Length: 572
Image (cartoon, rainbow, N blue to C red; front, side, top):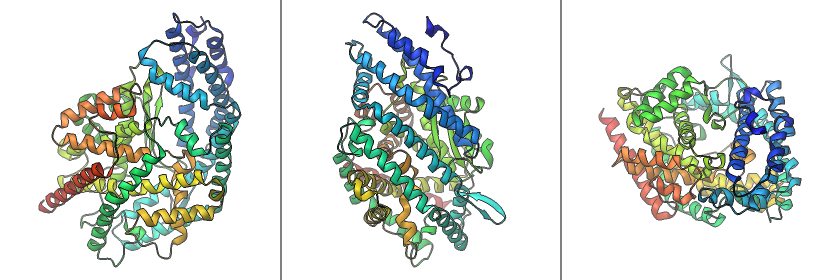
């Protein structure tokens, strides 16, 4: 049987050639399929997808690690040109075969729901359009990954420049912020054109799928079965009512502590304490060891997962020239392992990023025993609960006495920064999400960059008061350029907001029963995608709702905790 020869590692294949995978797809297409052999057929298909998806993930990782490496870029382009499009067509044919059968397996119910949706949405003429979008996305990475300047005789990229925004010297912060904005505005026309090109392709994709706009297409493509655009608007309104005032209180407190007439954009990230900025670690090895110590305190099994990642070199955590921006956790399906990519620079933000991505990594480990590859992938809204909950569950163990990064007073500062960051983030999330609702339901207007700038400005006025941008209106209006999700993964942002509300509930549970909250968290992660989104939230001890009443409770708890931490810090 052909599948007995299916390679067990991607090192044994050439992932840049469709011929590597084609015979296996063809065998599945031709094999007799009936009730008796369906499970074996599914198992073989699952193993093939594990190989294919891990190959794609590794090619993307390698390209991210060095955007200037032309060979790695060519490997990525070969995959998206020669392999991914044909795999989508072959996968669609297999879905059609499966959906024509009556599958009695209860554990396939949600998988079949998802496949039925995907099959109904699929159009072969959209395959090359998705390929073109992948190329444009790669171009965004090249533009932004190449933004750099010389600072005090040394070359600095955007991530490294961000470090200076925490400098106590206001002139240093201002210089770093202005330098960063100049780099972005220098690419303004290129990014405007790139986005317009993306919008044309996305509009055509939606039309090909017989849907009224790309928002309708994306909600289907992302499998958003449990909420609607109207539910998003309810969430936005609750944020405006509850969170925007809380964020304004944080900004005003910062303005007063810094003794400033107005808070400027370069003042947002600096701490107001007399102590120097938090510098929790130096270099990747220190970051890994501190994180490992913390995870061992949260749960020994989680610590063992992270140790495996370190031992198997599945962590690339430091920033460097040419590395793509951002951070992510990628699933290596064949190995049943995660890979964490990030741009650490030794700050609390860097620690927070690793804790976040480790939550995703633990999700991969916990769900790895599920029988089929489609069972593993949970809805993205819950994937982010995995990551954001971990950021909060580690709170008791950040101190050096637990092997973490901070003295007690520093740990209090780190926790204050994190909780304030959650409050400040939610209004920004609403801006990003609402901007895209406007873009994709007003496609003609969105083709003009000036209209995009105006809409972004209007949303900024609604959700982001407290910071004075006078004299830098161009930089403010072009803020949508600086959010990669808007270019690369449209509408993938409200997940962070929804997940944050879920994570705050997990954290609230942990305040009275840390062990119980962690156990529920792990049980929920182990379900992968075998339950609906509300069921996954419930398994983690949270409700899937985003109304004013719940936000009032959770944001109130966060503000109370911040006040208590500030009192504790002042007493130390």
